[in-house]
Length: 445
Image (cartoon, rainbow, N blue to C red; front, side, top):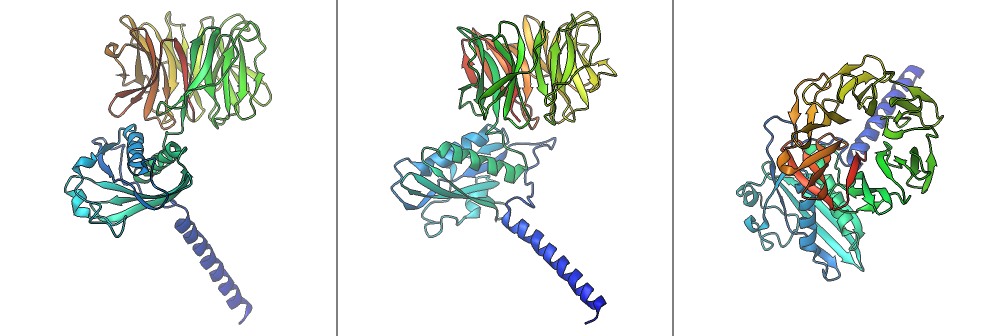
C-alpha cells in the first residue's frame, strides 16, 4: 500500500471512528437527539391528555409506603402545576393489571386511545431496606410506540425528590422545556426584629430562612448559578448591599457607600450587579463589577432613577424614573445611553422585570385602590393586564427562568401570598401565605 492509499485509509478510519463516537453519544445520552412531541408555544395550544398508570412492584420488601399509588399521584401533581397536561383520572382507565400481568410495560394501546389519552407513563419499582429503584417509560399511544425511558434511584424518605425528577424528565421529553420543579423564589418577609430573606420552591414546599441578621433585610437577588444571594441589609445600622455565599455560608459587604444602597439583579453572565445608590446626593443607577469592585454610574438626571433590571442578553436595562413627573418605566442600553420611556398608561408604574425570552417587560401599575401586574413589549407596545383587583393587590413581578410564569406578591384580606401565574392561561396558584408582610421577589435561575 502506497503513502496515498495509506493516508486515505487512515482518513476513512478517523471518519468511521468519529461517526461511531457520535453514534455512541446518541445511544448513551438520553435526549441527545430528543424530539419535541408537544408544541406548547402553538397559538391554539390545548392541554394534552396524559395518563400515569399505577406503578408495579417487581421485587423487594412489602410496599408499606404505598409507592404503587404514591409515585403516579405525586408525579401527576408536579405535572399539573405546568398547565400543559390534562391528567386522566385512573377511574377512567380501561387497561387492567390482569391483561398485562406477564409484562408490566405491556401496553394495550386501544384501551388508552379509547379514553382519549395521547401519552401514557408506566413505571415499576423495587424496594429494599428503604432504598428504591424505579424505571419509567413514556408511550405515544396514538403511534403505539415508546418515546422515553429512564431509571431512578433513591430512598423512601426521598421519594418526593424522585417524583420531581420523574416529572421533570417527562416534561422535558415531551415538550423540550426545562423543568422548574427545583427552582426557588426568594422574598423578603417581616419578622419581629425587622425583616429577613426566605425562599420557597416552585411547588410551594421547602420554605427556608436564608438570612438571620435580625435587622431590616430586603431586595433579594440570585446569582445566575444560584450559589450567591445578594440583598440590602441594615445590619450595620445603615443600608448596605451584601452577597451571601450559600455554599460556604459566608457573607460580605459590597457597597460601603453613604446614603441609600439598594441591591439590583446580577447580569446574565454573573459578572456585574445593578445597584441604586444615593452616594452622589440623588438616587441613580450604577453597575458594579463584582470581582474588582469597579463602579460605573449609568444614569445622570436630577430625577430619581431606581429599580433597574437587565434584558436577557445583557445589552439593555429597564428602570423606573420620575423624570416625566411620575414614576414610569424606561429602557436604556447597558452603558446608560439611549434612554426612552415605554410606559404611558397609568400614573404610577414601577418594579420592572424583563422576561428571559426578551419579548415582554412586566411591571406593577397603580390602578384604583392598589397595584396590579401588567406586561408590555420593549418597544412600549401591546400592553396587557395580568392580574385584576378581584384577586387583591398584586406587586413585585418576577419571571420564571423559562419566561412562562410570573411570580407576584398578592395582598387580600390581611393575608400576604406568593403566587405563581401561568402566562398561557393566566391561572394563579398560591405557593406561600402569611400574615407577615412580604416584599421583593427573585426567581432562581
